[in-house]
Length: 65
Ligand SMILES: [Zn+2]
Image (cartoon, rainbow, N blue to C red; front, side, top):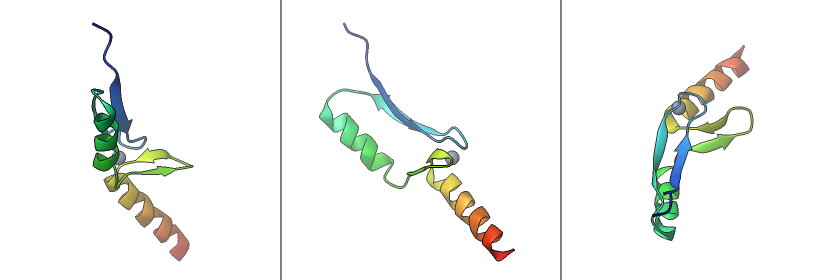
């Protein structure tokens, strides 16, 4: 048996991971769906929804200064 390919998306901020082994093309689209609320930030990298909220809050707080 060949090595299984582990598909995952991890949060650069808190380290949260969503992932599973690759089975077929569906594995990729399922992962895309599971992480549809995640974003890639060019400063921080991948962010889970929770860290995205924190970052938004921090950035808006900063603008209020
Ligand atoms: Zn996170």
